[in-house]
Length: 321
Length: 281
Image 1 (cartoon, rainbow over the protein chains, first blue to last red):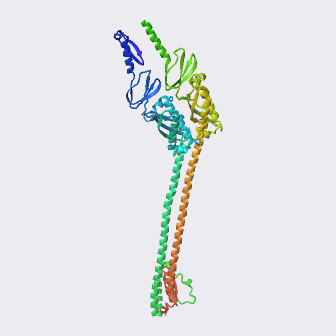
Image 2 (cartoon, rainbow over the protein chains, first blue to last red):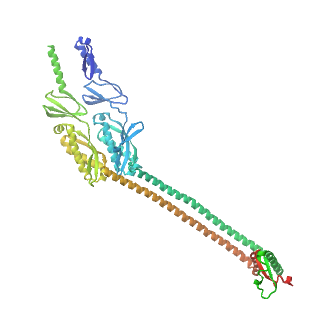
Image 3 (cartoon, each protein chain N blue to C red):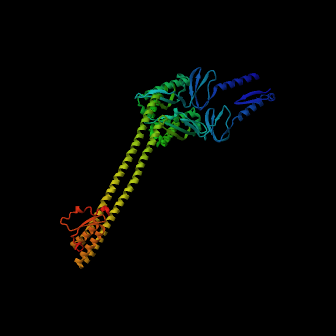
């Protein structure tokens, strides 16, 4: 029959055979096991924080380590390289699946509007000693401080800043404020990153916000259309103006040339005329009369005193030609 | 004999076990002597006391503690109702006082809640809602923290920080904010559209104006050019024709005949005319 005894936090079975050997070797083995219970491993992502009689004494690096067994020394091994993550306003519920928590994500802006903002906070342990001994509920502390910071910072900005240009600024200010709160609590936590995920108008008014965007588009479209009209009309008008000018210039040149031509003709005729005035005049007259009368219908009125044209109207009607 | 030794050892172990104790980094200890607090140990490490039952220990947390109070409805100075969800970070700084006045954490929390809530309500009542939401929030909270610190000192508690986690509005106020936001955005949208129309109209009108000006300018220059042409032509004609006006008149009249009379013209000629003189006689 084996006897079970408890030494420190170790449970040991002692076979009957050993019991017969007496108390001394038993105690020796017990003491040995007790000393061995001080061996511990610090993982590569951890740091060992050792307390001697409850008081912090040293840190242990990754690898195999030893501390005096309980109750003399105890060790904690917080993960110091791990970056922890907190989600504000939403929770990841599966692969690429999120659930929004409007209670957390809806907040008032400085101009008394409401925005829907979601944020991720990443943090890690900077000082394992402070982290281990100074405060309770690390995750809750970071979460509450993050929420308070985000709301405080969003409250400093108006809604248009929060939705557009001020996003980066809000992120940076939140990070700064959050870090200052965590420092004030002496948590030994460093904020690695604060990322504003999505800042949008609440769903109750999102249609109106979208309409503003499309109104902006409408405005641009209207202006562009008018600009298009302008780009069509002005060059055409310039072209038309140029056409008018060219036409006038042509008219001018033509007018001058014709004048010159007419004058040249006249001058040469005048030269001839001056050689033999009477003959030339008669010749020109007859040539013209011949030319003119050969084309037109003619009615010759015989010698009558009155020469009444009406009497002759139906003698040679025009239509009977 | 052996038994006596063994019992002495056992007694010794019990003596050591009840008189030697450790104080952790995370705690502070009050030593009670027959139920009466005698001293406090805040330094972590190994300590001794009189063995049980003469002295015993009360251990208290030495860390920064947390209290998340339930959301409360508070009125601002401008009589707007706000639902404030705040949290408190606090510490037991005088465990002896703490033990005497509130004994344990649950009672401490209810005291803390009373004090912080009343300070918060009073402070918020002196500010307008806009101030609470915006830049003054931190100042208000600092004041609440200070006041609460003073008020809780009697319990051996230090209020380290009071912070508003959330400020929400009651449902009906929220609705009115949404209505306002909606109206504001509609106004903006209308403004953009009207501006678009305005600008487009401006561009079109300017375009039409410029077109009219361009064409009128062109007309002006064109007419001037035409006039120049006419003037030069007239000058040329005048210079030449004035050398013999009679002959010009004669030639030009003949030319006019040729132009006036065509195949549609019916000429009525008296037989007495010079042209037919030979024919008639």
